[in-house]
Length: 306
Image 1 (tube, rainbow, N blue to C red):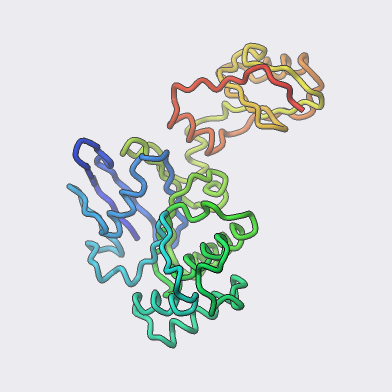
Image 2: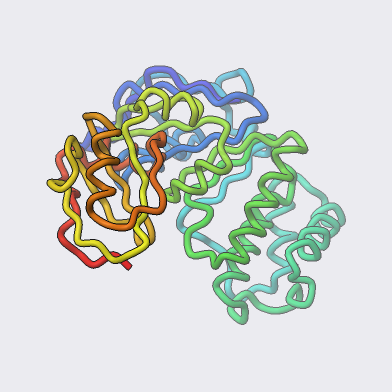
């Protein structure tokens, strides 16, 4: 669906994207992750031809991307943009017509989505009267109204409460099942783990991860432990032989180690009433932090753990 080859983009002295490659399979849910300022939004905007690369090639739908292809692409930018003084239905019809729908087609599609997202009672209200969560759902409807073949979303879950987040997630999964290819950037590693067939991470303009979650986790090995004590425990990395990083996650502790997990288990048993201990693949969140903050010391300080 998308092929990017050796793309570079520089803004004055800042190299935003450096010889970047990306291949998005048709019909996939593709997660695009990376720290702020890593080049994610710049890359998405180059795919959309909002900006042009300095070098390299970008193909969409198997051919060099021309502006006419935008009718087959839906784009939800991180900076939301709707007309606050315009009624919901009027602006949905407007956005639908921009994507090539007739007025009646846009109205039918809008009514279908408004019903699905429980917003029918608000269709004749001005956007300024809606809550933030409702406004975000209207922005989403405007993006998917024309049933795009390719849907590009920049931080689509930011600011959504759990109920609306679940509604949007389910809508995205349904779109994918109906044939739409999804490419979205996110800082929500849990969401990326749950939804994505394929994950790519960009860091300082370069690709540093690319593959399925299972493959990425396998590449980082089984060097992570997760355990929980029944009682409150004062714990630091020095208490566990071979542990290099230790984090208090609330109910659980998470440790990264380079030694013998059996020795760590034996030491943990001596520190408190241990009720859970497992060797796991590192989470996507943990891998993200390892790459984005490689020199950060995250050993837990001595804290009470309830």
